Length: 283
Length: 305
Image (cartoon, rainbow over all chains, first blue to last red; front, side, top):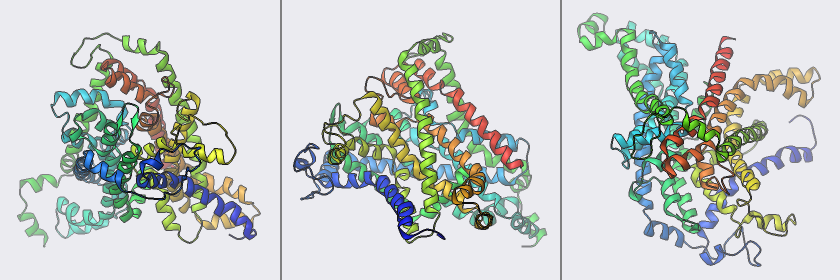
């Protein structure tokens, strides 16, 4: 900053930034505190004399134990992980080769297909979930992981394709041309020259796709029905809320633990994640 | 490898893949098959369902536009439609304004910037359903930390039922959506800000432009293309939102906070009226189509400039 006194910097910079950080992160802090709070303290009304919102005097892991022993939380974690990983792999495979074709090869209808895939990228899941539920039932894959493994790529592939198209366009064409002059086939040039260079782009697309699958809710809610098939978001919402009764301790424990895999993956690849996110809107 | 041996070892498949259009075809087949099976075909089925009287387990027959006529006269559907537009409009304005502000703050150099940027994205990364549950707990009428906070600040003296009053519930839903969306706007716009050459700012400053003029005449026009894409993308997502409302209010109290998607779920899956549910879902289509067409037009215009 060139101009302005010190207090101005506090007023216009540190204060708003601190407010943003507080506002954006407080719910997560609240999740942690609730998870560790014993029930007696948890259900103390807001105007109770001893209402201590921001800390707990005797932290406990009861809610976590309860969650893991009394519910199928471990199974849901495993289901979500499996579905997210397989769906991401399928989508990456399809998206990388389709992105390469659309970015690099000249063929009839290339522009039309590119636009078509871009449009499917913008189709929200909520537009098609009812007919898809019918189709899933007719294919007899309802209530199995396949229902999600096969449908998640519908929103992941267009995203991966779009992102990879942008990435391939930044790789100089001369690299392939050199390889082809040296005798490589088109296929070899793609597989051994271009794809290795595109690894950062592939990582971005993969990490973003993984978090998207972990976040998906409506397909999982509609296509799965037995408790042991559910994913974390659906399991937590449908099995820990019974009618009007909310088991807030285990619920928050589930929300916290269910977020950890995504947060973990994210923390290792923040830069790739941000590249994927901003790449996906730059077009 | 020299060229002649390369050619000699190629089989018929490699020779076919040397043709650009053949290679492109095979590279696109898996994507096209999956998208046809699970997007194009369901869309056709959805249109058919919306024109039939199918229920769960009953294929049903063609009834024309009867479902659309029925939902048109359904007051809950009208509320849901209005809610969706209000929800999309209000959240977009707030997300853009706050996101831009945060992006400008983050565009400076300060200690720990990388950490703060990483942490700020958490609301966007963490599965929406799980973070919305934390909000639902914060909005709990009896145990609400927000009630405590406002009480301590002497703003209120009785409890507030955040999610039991229709208008307040809509406000809460909007607030949580803004909370979740601001990081996405901020980080995307920050990426846009970082592509702007600082020399331009310096030149404008030397010409005597103040801070606000520099933002309005230098930054904003250069940031507009990124902003447009971010906004249009987020408008589509918000317009078709489901999980946030489903967890926070379930469309209540008294159906006051339904969106297209949550109402379609309640009718189509909850009560099993597939045809009517499909019609409600498809009612989103015209508005979504307009946004997509506008977005395609805008991208093309920017590319051709």
